Image 1 (cartoon, rainbow, N blue to C red):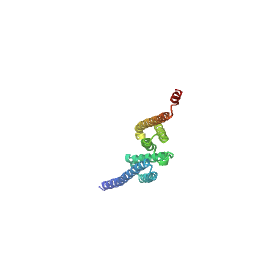
Image 2 (image 1 turned 120 degrees about the vertical axis):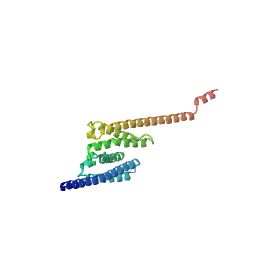
Image 3 (image 1 turned 120 degrees about the horizontal axis):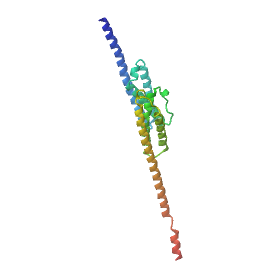
Image 4 (image 1 turned 90 degrees about the vertical axis):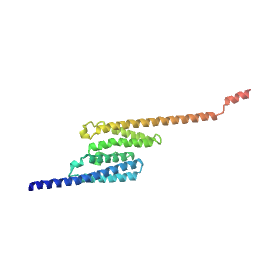
Length: 226
């Protein structure tokens, strides 16, 4: 019976430790996601300092999450933890690109390829949102710059042809990114056409106004000859 008692104590102690680690990881993961989403929200409002503050907090939480789960790799690779890291990548990359900074590399963010690429795929949605905000004020070269980056992201994603078990469902994210890029290209094309049409109408209006203001000298010459 003493052996059964030892087994019971071992099991309870083991699960208590894992349960505490899991609860802590869940809390930290939620905080990472919250700070990442707030950073993206701030960068869309061009609140640069606030965005960077949230990114700094998210980075600190990610580092602590990795440290706390070093003895629990199964919890680190659990869905909720990996989702938090993906949101972190999305926020870091989005804020960098909107600020016209170099795109952060996977090793700089210290994340694995699958997490990085899934986060990168979701960046296309945030860049589309930024493009639409710009287009509301009229076409600009900045929207073309962002569309070019979206094209680069999609071109990268379609080269990653591995099983979903390795890429965590990247193929579906790539398909979604393609639709986002194409819709954004269509929106920018319409904006360019509208701008050209508006410009042409203004030029025509000026031309007609100038013609109305110029006296008809032929009419006056005929009357003088009579």
